[in-house]
Length: 389
Ligand SMILES: *Cc1c(COP(=O)(O)O)cnc(C)c1O
Image (cartoon, rainbow, N blue to C red):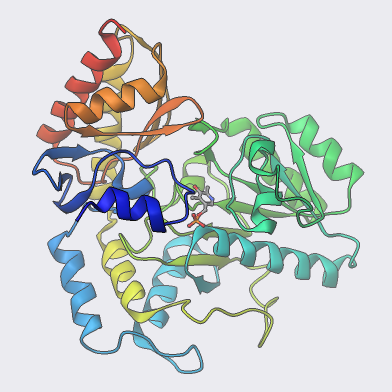
């Protein structure tokens, strides 16, 4: 059977797929249907936190699969409660709403912020300020939040009440917060899809002060950066701030769909019965995977993330054909002299899977990628970037 032909005929044509069919993997290695081996520096876009078919993770998931695979949120289940407790204890947040994706985690953050502001300051205080070049999801509301107009065209009108300000420009955000009756400011500490650019500490700390002073909620979208990838448990922890709401998803479970919206002091009681819900949210199998993943994100593992990050940055910086390396931890962007698409294609031919982001080559390896595999992949990447086009 020609998988590519069947896929092209029957799957909606929303992805520009690479001409590769992946059949299995182990850790940071994957194999295609021709038996070709690749070193995976993409982890399914920051999802497979400890790589593919990791033994510890698999055990946790399989064990829960044999007990109960799903129950309605009308009943208590142990994995959901334990995971919420772990998330709160490790972040200082007070309550968790579980969903299935990053977009849904942000939808909940937006609903909680609007309800808080409506109750506290009045229904007119509905504006959410986000940054240009941000990415917050593909639903009509999270598209409105996303500060990149290329994603908006063809889908208008979007949800009202979103205003965009320039990243790293505190005066612009402050002006917009003064101009509009504002419920919340939502940021990614490292803009992922926007080109893997870390916000400056001055800007993020300034935003946190502005929010505190004006009783505006600060929402950190940790969908991509969160769950250990930054070298800290959550990206905002690198900035010494405490957001009011944190949304996360991608790497939380380590490979199954799970979104979470963490609600801090101010907003912990804002959502009540029937204000929000999700049939699959907090699925016990996904929560069991997340408990396993989160309990492995210990200080030595996070130090391993920082060590791998330094290895990548030191290996790539200043190499011929490489203009810059940006980002944080194991969420890194490479500005190459060649077009990113060409680097990605050549790397793939030589057995290394990397991603793109806004014209850059993006690396999102497993947090425990073996150092020999990482070095080998970097060697290939350096050669590809440095060789004549
Ligand atoms: C991927 C991403 C989302 C959307 O997550 P989905 O699970 O695809 O809905 C939202 N915010 C950020 C920062 C992301 O990287």
